Image 1 (cartoon, rainbow, N blue to C red):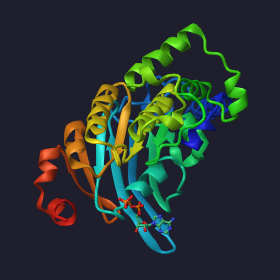
Image 2: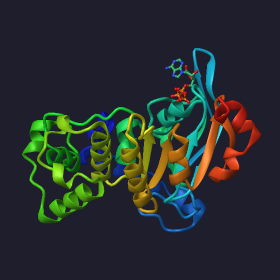
Image 3: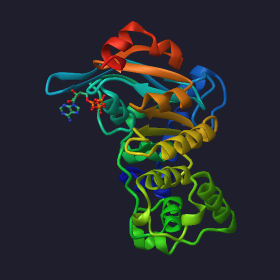
Image 4: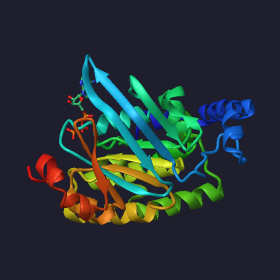
Length: 290
Ligand SMILES: Nc1ncnc2c1ncn2[C@@H]1O[C@H](COP(=O)(O)OP(=O)(O)OP(=O)(O)O)[C@@H](O)[C@H]1O
């Protein structure tokens, strides 16, 4: 579980809603686009849920991102590939508010300027992130981990006194089935396999109903069977959630992705359907041919 998402309790959610509500009340964006948008809601009426334009990030003068553009449609499953050092993690850091760009725009929907928010607020606005290594609460059972995520409270003790309603229990049971952990509900998370921990963490993110889910190398270190099950899981989530998956496993990318974006040297080299990208001579040169 990502610490930033665990920090995104209901209080932050309310504050973020209030803040975006204030934006709407000012009438700027709503007036410009001339259609009703609920305060705090993500406006996807222009066919995009995540939009980066001309993003530049420098670390001590070294440009990790050089005018990066990205346009993700609601419900899309986008894979991001590219050689080591291409800027994939930096891109995720910019979207989630961990790294501030020197230049550029980052929008959630058409109206929410993510550069105005900090990391926990961005999580509360509906951007979930899964880091490469699973970070579940190992002494707690699978069920307790999911309850904790549902409670959205970083204070473990407080969250353990949380009792889900009947409807919430049903949701957790459905989540357990989705992540293939029905039979492991009462097992301590520390006893799960690597792949099962990854699924549990995805389940914990889903318990918080993210609109956009960012996944950094979700199948790294998984067995073939676990990789296959993860592909099936992500394909089930597609449409209900928007997924951005950074991954090096090309067989996995081929199965899951609607569209593949290739990053190289801090910018987009090319993007398109897997087969088109995979036979692009530039992609073979910088990445696939290695
Ligand atoms: N905090 C930092 N300070 C200095 N340089 C950094 C920092 N973070 C990233 N970089 C550099 O920026 C470049 C892009 O790094 P990034 O981690 O985004 O690449 P990546 O595409 O995710 O690579 P990988 O596939 O190896 O994870 C690299 O050259 C990296 O060394």
